[in-house]
Length: 302
Ligand code: SF4
Ligand code: SF4
Image 1 (cartoon, helix red, strand yellow):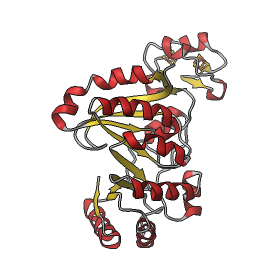
Image 2 (cartoon, protein in one colour; image 1 turned 135 degrees about the vertical axis):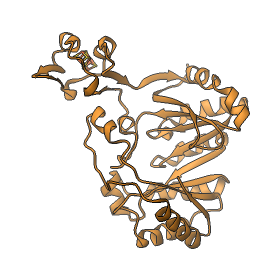
Image 3 (tube, rainbow, N blue to C red; image 1 turned 180 degrees about the vertical axis):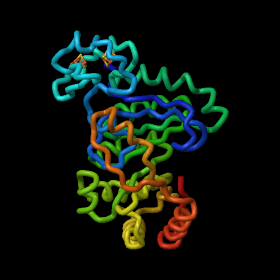
C-alpha cells in the first residue's frame, strides 16, 4: 500500500528554496509553533477550513449546510472553528471561495505525478524538489519514498527542516537528500521554548549528528527583531555553530517581514508583530559579516 501524507500546498517555480528553479511541497503539521511562522496553516497536522472574510458575499449557503459552525451575525458571517470537523462540505459549496479546505491527503505516487509535471525546468535550470512545511520530517517515511523516486529520475532533492524530530526520521531520508536547509532559531534554550514552544536541545543534537555525516547543509536563521538579533545572540549562535561538523556549508540569514499577517486571520490564529519594518540591506550585511568572522563560514541574507 502506498504511504500517504497531508499536503497543504505545492508551489511551482520557486527560486529561493535550493539550487535552480524548484517545486516546493509543504507538509502539514509541526512540532514547533514559532511565533513568526510564515505558514501558520501548516502548524496543525489536521485538515482545517481557512476563511477569507473579505471574499464572503453573505449568500448563506454555509449557514444552511452547517449551522453549528456558521452563523450570520449582522453583516458578518461568523465561523465557529471549535465546532468544525473539516468535512469540507461548506468549502465545496462556497461560491466566492471565501472558505477553503487546507490539507489534502496524497499518496507518494500521486505526489510524484505532480512533481514530474515540472521536470522541464528541473533539467533546464539545475533545479529540483524541496520538501518543506510544517515539518516534512514528521512524514519521514513518505519523504524517503518520494525522494528515492526523485533520485531514480535524477531530480535534485532538498529537505527543509527545523529538526525537532526523532533522529531516526532524519536517518531515513539521508541517503536520498542532496541538500538540507537546517533551521536554527534561538541559541538560548529557555528563550527558544518561549518563542517556539520547545527548547532547542533535540534540534542541536540532530544538526550536530547530521553535520558530521552529510556534506551539504545550509543553516537558515530567521532574524527576528528583539528576539535573536543582538550582538550577544550572534556570539551565542557562533558558539553553537562552531560545535557542528564539516557538513555546514553556509549560513543564510532571513530578513524579518510581516507578509504572513493576513494568513493568521484566515487560519483563525493570533498574530505577533515583532517590528513594523523589515531590516535594511546594510543592517543584514553587517550581521552577515559578524557571522562570517565569528563562525568562519560563508554567510548571506535573503
Ligand atoms: S468543514 Fe464541515 S464541519 Fe467544518 S464548518 Fe464546513 S461544513 Fe461545518
Ligand atoms: S458560503 Fe461562502 S460566501 Fe456564502 S456565506 Fe458562507 S462563507 Fe460567505
